[in-house]
Amino acid sequence: RDAGVARAALKSADVVIALAATVGGIEYNSAHHASIFRDNMTTFLATLEAAREESVARLLVVSSACVYPRHCRIPTPESEGFRDRPEPTNEGYGWAKRMEEYLAGAFSREYGLSIAVARPYNAYGPRDNFDPRSSHIIPALIRKAFDPDEETLLVWGSGRQSRSFLYVTDFADALLRICERARDAEPTNVGADEETTIAETAELIAGLSGTGKRIAFDPDRPEGQPRRRCDTTRLERLFDFRTRVALRDGLAATIDYYRREFLPERGGR
View: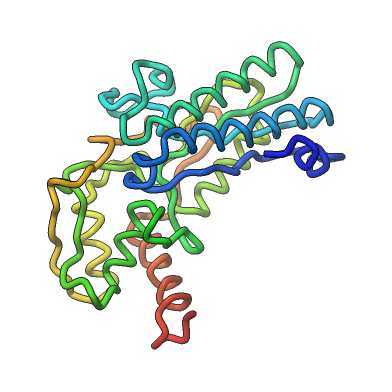
């Protein structure tokens, strides 16, 4: 957030990938709209201005599918990123990411900065955030699957809400391709060309974890965006990218990581 620190960090950098963000799961985001917006904008403005002052050759701005409105087209094209308001449970984060995209384009046009913009969907994988206060859906469900104090694997909402999950290695590959090849500040969706319900995801996690927990649903809890499916047309056409890691394989690798790092009987922390 400090302009001097940001400029020192970017000094002599040729390429900067702006990944820093304050964000969490639905419960965290719903309770922190103001601070999420403030913290993300402060950090981004410091980074963007430092990139301009240091004449960084290429800046990749990492946005989010949270820019999209609640009732967007499925699959969702990039053109819907500024239609209506962001989905209410993620509104603070969604507006921050919309403003980052707007500033990216404005700085590119006014100052001639070479900026690329990526809009990732639901990323997950080893070394994800498993903190119960702020984790996203997949690490939250994995943690619940192994929690000895919970008899069921509880899913918030109906379970019918859907996502386009993106494994971490695919995420990194796509970001590097966009950073290298993009020649404008136009956003590009980054996600899998598939749609998986949260209920289906929970069933996969219950099976792969081997805990045998029954899936239960809490319809009184928020479930966020009703549907997400990434329109990957631009990603495939301009950057020759398709995801390589299937959801089952990515979940298995993430569960193995959780076992190693967090379960004491397996030597974890």
